[in-house]
Image (cartoon, rainbow, N blue to C red; front, top):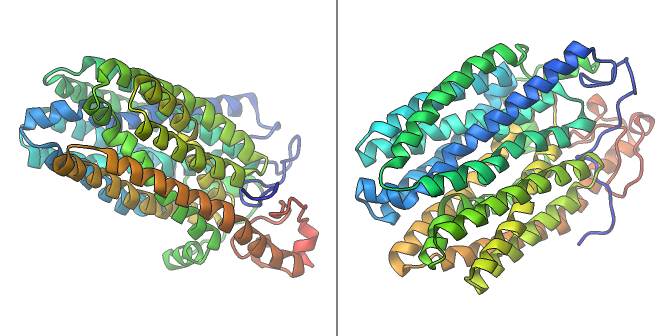
Length: 469
């Protein structure tokens, strides 16, 4: 565990209390402006909730789908595994799209695509077609309406000191999916009910598309937020944006640890319900476990956002990965209903903590025109880990009739991520903050894009004047 420190990349200076250049969500915003912000955040929450259905429907209906398509669990795992890989490739692309064209267009496009493909998936009788629909099409849709574009939306609408909690609120849409939708799907699961669920979700996504186009702001990219804060964003080439992200040591440290997030999340998203069924705990225990996971996820996300906005991102990440590893050990050691429920609580409290803290480091530490791309590349690495766990779980069950190997592997990887954050990230933050004290750096940022005027990894103020001397 690192010493008591405050880190640069998850916090920037407080905005002025009123007027001036305090950001779009400052106290000087009109009542009408505040209402529009509230509506946009509420819609973002709903979109996150609906996006969760792309993943949690497969989690709940996994066994029924294998029986409906008459394939083994290992064969069916090809569909979610293809989803993981497509999501990995699509994430940086959608990040670039959101940077260039804004969150509104990215979200609307993803909603239309998701609505159409849910309808197609609900009718097809071919597993090959379903694999393409789910593993490729719905993966692209999910990428366009989930973590990356919603992160860009938060960057467009809010100043840095309010992004952590706001992003946590949006991401809690996925948590509500665990609390409300996933238990509902599990209870409805019988025969081909999943097909009706897919069809209704397709209709709902198409309706929400219209609402999104009417409600979300039309201005695109983080340039809008930067302009509102009184800054002139520099337009960079695609190569320049990519070079900035790949040259950031903060990006690489966060993303390597985030690989472990992908491994552990994929176990929950793809194999958890099937694992609980395999060890004889049944649908009721599975419903309770995922409901507890979702409820804890809501609390964990808000707590993570609160502490990230106050500069404690390292602590959030270390504890999230460590507790996640512990939860997997408990699930493996004691295959009982009580252990499953404890697992749900512990894993849930960390589920979005890693997402919020990791995203805030990148959103608050990189150039305005490269934030979506950075988030996309981080999720690319995440999804490589997700693919490993998704496919590995299916192969493990087909060959050994057990999910235990993937549970153990996930726990080990979570511990590795804990070490990466606890040992390397504080050193990287100190190393990247130090040059700003000694001399002027471009755009008032450290080599990793950290804003002058924030705090160093040692918790000491790094004033703007110091950065410009």
